[in-house]
Length: 371
Length: 98
Image 1 (tube, each protein chain N blue to C red):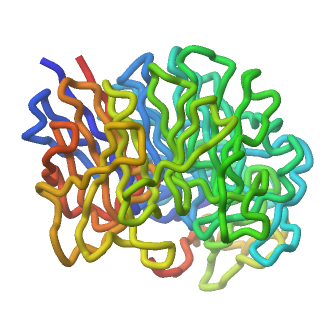
Image 2 (spheres, rainbow over the protein chains, first blue to last red):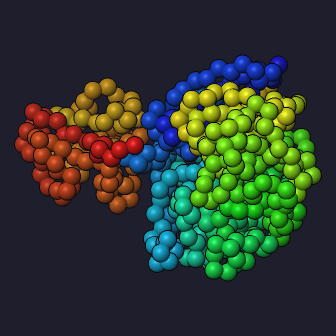
Image 3 (spheres, rainbow over the protein chains, first blue to last red):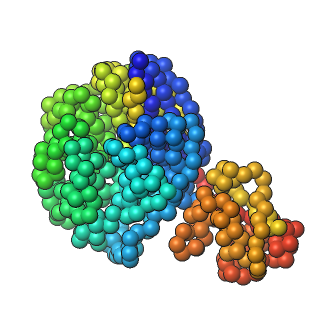
């Protein structure tokens, strides 16, 4: 029977939740790396027992941990992230030039084919790569140096590269997203990059249609349709059908189009999920009701999903990397909250249940479907 | 033999219990101790001081003999009692809330 492993990163440690294919009883291990912020954990598609974790602390900096046994044991690997060449400057909050400084790893994206190759999205925004299982990291500096880097500016959460998407049909194509610069694409394996933000409109920047400067919160893609991307921007849910060259808004009838997460159903490439959040100054659900919204038409027409979710007095947030899907049939959807709950649906979102509910604030959720 | 007391999180990273004991060649300074510490426990590289600049991380402090030595030059000689192992060199995570 199939199994599911849910990797949960929190403000105070990592947790690994496992269940069989029914997904109704869960074993929880953790906290791993107790007391440390775990921004992200992700398993290798090529070797599911190989898992990487970003462990960070305001006191002691960055650690990268690697497991070869599905999260039972861990070993520290390389934590040296040094920008290529002279780092230069980007814009600071007040518009002045500010030196690039490494702060932490936000996202780890293992290669689709090689468990020793991993991409790391970091703050201040840059993309790094290891090809030796995390021992050594090198910057793909064509992104930071392609020209618009000096104009990038941090969002409220820092200037983080938080999304890395690998095209399963073209190993030279990678999409990334940065708050608050926008989305970018390489078609040559990371040597050269270009902004892919045409069609985004952001009223909070001087030129709402600028080439860069948009606060992209998250981007998602279905493996069967790698030219179609879905984006939750600061405000607005967006869709591209030409690999990011053009975007159109698909917020449709959402009650608010602010939010952080967005994900795609494992078997239905036009079924997408968001968690609407009231506003950029009120980071909690509308009317105290936690709701997931699902579109089965790739956007514009959305349905409210609330069965099993709090109907009142709920004022948590769902952060950008805190939603994931499994690939079982029926597809499982998972998301974690800043209140420490991880909610799961084993029926594509029709009903939900908390599979753990008193963790530290959840920073990230990833799911592995295992044989 | 130099004695180094690490905070709990760094003891976990280094997989040690209690104080660490180090052989330090030549003059005993902060830099010499940290070089020896990182050589013996490579996982600690980058956790106490920057990989490249070797500057102390902002929320890490160095104490010894009831003195805060954090702002001393990394190449200044440490007190004789640290060099002789009578007193430990303390690596401390600063009180910073959260």
